[in-house]
Length: 499
Image (cartoon, rainbow, N blue to C red; front, side, top):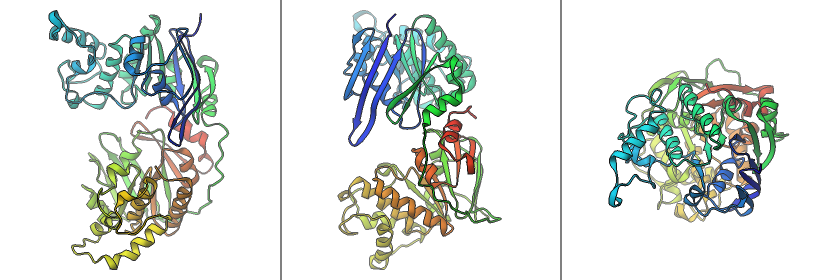
C-alpha cells in the first residue's frame, strides 16, 4: 500500500529566515503520526505547507499517489486535508455553531440558512465533550465568552465537522485538561479505525507515547529522524530533537551569595499561570524556558502590570510591592523589554528622544522636561547597543526594525532599575547586536541588577542564564542549573509531563 502523503525536500524561506531547509514526511493511511521539534524547528511551517496555508518554495508533495500543490486551505480541504491551527482561527463575536460550520453552513430550501439543522449537527458534535467541557458550552454560546479550553474544543470540532481524511493537530491539547485529553484521544482512535490519518504535534511527551504510532523529528528546518513509537524511548527522541548541541559562548559567572533575594515571587496566579513561585538573587540572570506559550511571557507581563493577576505576592528587596499597572512597576523598580515592539514598545510618529524618555519620565514623575539635561543619558544608553540613528530628534519610524528594538532596550537601560524583565527582547536584531546586548546584560548583572530572561531560542537561554525555570502549561515544571543546564535537559523538561 502506497503512503497517503509524501513530503520530500520541502523548503520555505521568509525573507532572510530559512524556515524549512529539508522537510520530509511520510504518512500511512489510518496512522496517528507525531511531528516533533524544538521551537523554530519547522514543524508548523511544514504543516501549513501541506494544508495550503502557505506556499512552498521547493520540494515535492504527493497526496494519495498524485502531486499535491494546494493554493489555499479551501483547496486542501476539498481534497480531504484539515488543519487545527495553533493560533485559534475562531471569530469571537459568533456563536459556537456559526464558528464550527463557517464556510459550509447548513442550508435548506431556496438556499436559506437552516437553523434547526445547524443546531442539531452542532449538538451532535458537542455531545462528545459535554461531560468534560464545563458550564456554558452550548451551540448558541458566544465564543468570546468561552474559557480557553472550551475555545480549543470548538476549534477541534470545527476541523472534525468537515470530515477530512488527513487531519493536522498543531498543539490541539495545549489548553485541555486530562479528562478532555482522554475524550480527544478516544476520538482519534475512532478516526484511526475509520482510516483517517492524523498528524499530532504536542509539547507533552507522555501524550506522544500514549497515542502515536510513529514519530518524525525536525531540527533547524530539516527532518532528522523517524521512529516507531513502540521501538524507541523518550531519551532517543529528545536526543534527535536537540542533536549534538554545544554552547561555547557561556561565560562562567559567580552570582553573589546574598541572604536576601532581590525579587521574591510567591504563588503567582492568573488566567494563564498556576501558582508560580521563585526567587531572583542580585546579579543573577534567571531564564524562563520551555516551549512558546507555556506562561513565560505571562509571568513577565504580570509582574509588570501589563496583564492582570488573580493571586500571588511580590517582594522587591525585602519589601512587598503592589503592581496594578505598568506605572506602578516602573516606580517600584521593574523594567520590561518586549520583543513585540509594534504592540508593546513603539510610540509611532514620535521622536527617538520621546521613545527613549518615556520610562524615565514615569519613574521620576517628571512633569516638566528639559531635553538638554537628559540627552547625554539617553545617548549613552543607545550607544551601549551600537544603535545607528541620525539624531534623537529623528522619528522612530526612520529606523530599521533592528535599530528600533535597540532604542526600546535603551529606554529601560536609562532607568537604572534594579530588576530587568526581558520578554524575548532580541527579536528583529542581528547577531552582532545580540552579542552587544548579551555583553550588556552580563555587565548589568555584574553590577547587581537582577534579570529575568525569556527567549524563544533555547541557545540564547543556555548561553546567558545562571539558572533556567522550565515552564509547562502555566507552571514551573523543572529548574535547571549547573550540570543540568544543557540543551538535552532543557528539551526533556519542556516536553515532560504537564504539571
